[in-house]
Image (cartoon, rainbow, N blue to C red):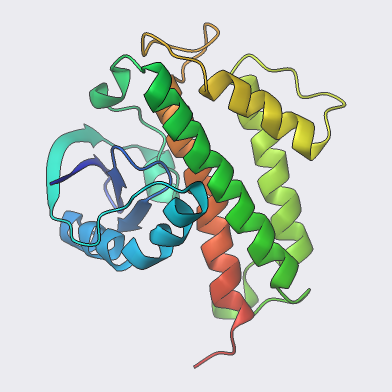
Amino acid sequence: MTAVYLEVGKKLVFASAVDWPGWCRSGKSEELALETLADYHPRYAVVTKQARIAFPRRFEFEVVERVPGSGATDFGVPEHIPACYGAAVSAAEAKRLTALVRAAWTVFDRVAAGAPAELRKGPRGGGRDRDKMIDHVLEAESSYSRMLGIKPRDLETDALRDAIAAVLSAPSDGGPIAGKKWNQRYAASRIAWHVLDHAWEMEDKSEPAG
């Protein structure tokens, strides 16, 4: 069984695999969110392969928790921290979470390197081109790092990611990091989700319409 929690908003639901940071998709209902999560299994397998972590080919979802969403949820951001993320994190689990986050970064960088400068636009011409999407992801990582007690000022991308990984790779009691709101599991999940969400968007928009 693959444990999943649902963040349920009024207009949108996020389904997140508890033990697989970044394997998180949304839909207009619980059923659609879970269906989309299942559809992305092969794409997330690329991340686990990069991390050299075994990933089950067959899976069955078990919803272990539901958390109420908010305006942020409906806007398209999984913002609320489930109780299941409050469990203590062993040294081995911290290493595993960090490997998956680093793999998500690698996948994003690889996709960005192969993407055209101009990406296919969404309805009514919406969406970012490649360089603006890259900048958006890096700016978000800088913002996220503050939730881990990191001061990102003057840190280049690699140094900032190393600092984030250093925090994520330490065992913890599962409580908030550095007196902030985020705990370790949620931080890994949120960071990997954002990176992969845009990596997959960039992949899709690099392809011709149709």
